[in-house]
Image 1 (spheres, rainbow, N blue to C red):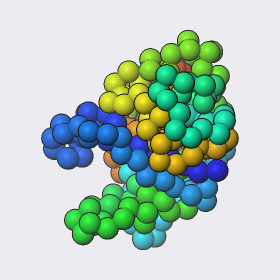
Image 2: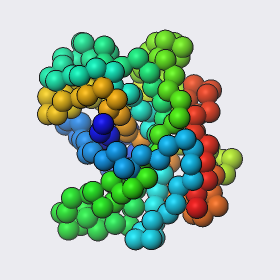
Image 3: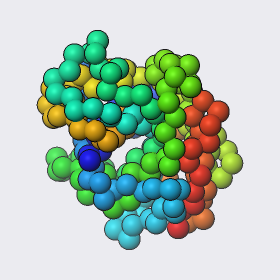
Image 4: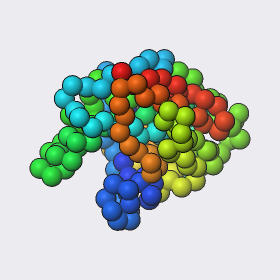
Length: 207
């Protein structure tokens, strides 16, 4: 099982991070190992090697079949359930990697950096349209990220088609589809609560 994470898939987040609205001409993605998974709403422990870890809340699609070079029009056959995840990012280290042209694994792929909801919801129970789902994140009871999947630059089916041309999806793979604006740092004692279409799926503390 692998975790594929999409970067820069909401215009407002690009503006937030880069100070511009330069949309990538194709999807951007990176991977995390299965050791990055943080399951069952267990606490997230801030790693010792970073002084600035940020939350990034995302819709997560669970792949239900082997898929290689699948066309966009058939990509919806690859999933039936969706959940939420948080891509924890060591932002201070990421800035250094970007400045030096280095890979991102150290800031993105560390242990327990991918919180995943313990429950995935059948898409049909959410209305059936993966590009019309509301989700939000609360930090200590205050909404800090709030978006609808219709705002994605590249929709889920496009993402699956693009990625599957490069690497084969297998059953159980997780696709983190990108985060909207509102990302920010976490500190010890914080509580993160994330909801999808009115269903609270993530609720855990920062240690």
